[in-house]
Image (cartoon, helix red, strand yellow):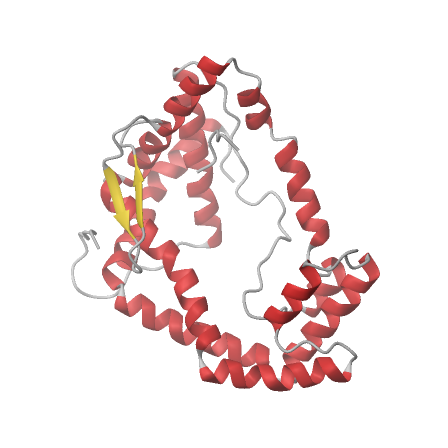
Length: 283
């Protein structure tokens, strides 16, 4: 949700058969843009300004949950401190946050209610590991989601479930014996290069708490070494294989939510194209 801030129930209308395809990268961006247009228009109707937020304002931003394994990216960004600085600066100068902070206190409260709705928070979703999320059925964010995806309860539950699968999958990969065994030759490679870290997590922990922090050249050199060792040791290959295996297993385990999530997104594409075309933002 890209609104102002103060700093499995799931149904599917699909018949049995082939699972719905996953939307393309371009289609996901289209859905994001359409949602932002709906949010902007709703906020304007309620008397507030809102500027649509880009889906990926820094295209090079990436996450490496297991090990940094992209040598070219490491040579350019190290561990991404340049990207984090850029993101922090964008957050500091964000037009929506500056507008929100500039409102009188009563108007700030009204803007939050306009964007996020008011209590009671009757739309509830539960993650596979039991965490409960709640939101208001009112407000511009819920209106935008309902306009795009139809049933807000079904959309919220499906999205919460699918979003949670990422962390669950990554946890299973890291806990897998094959992954921990593959870390050993990676650590040996790093030691041979003069970096005695026992694991990628150990490396992150030690470097993130280092004072003073790594210089730019040190950061890039260490990141490149990590990425090279990830490939020569086989850790990158093992991590990819396990990530794919657990991903498929979880998709089967939660296939109802995954199917609903994909169907709702695919069904929303026609509305999204119309919205972006009318707004002059379609590609």
